[in-house]
Image (cartoon, rainbow, N blue to C red):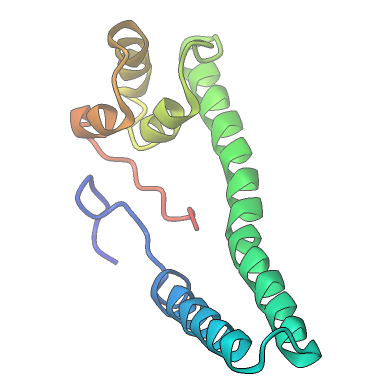
Length: 140
């Protein structure tokens, strides 16, 4: 794996991000065609309900683990700031700013966190300001 930086830090899983949405779209089209062809017969309604369940599962499959990771990132970055500065992160930092700060090296993290609060930097601006990138290869 190449060294992580601003240009390549986003992670895409081809099966989840490309194949599954296309599969759901094809299934949705098939369900719509079936409903027009057969009307609201028992089989078409059951297939529609199965599709709705799969579509909901598709989104929840991603949302729940990300929420758990978000909580872990916030706790990790609070702990890192506490270890480096003896105090928790400023409560005015948004979660998006905290997630951007996780890429900063320990040397620049505290100052960049303060700058993010005082200048209300966007997450993208925070990432662009990082000089020594700290990779996060565990993010799903």
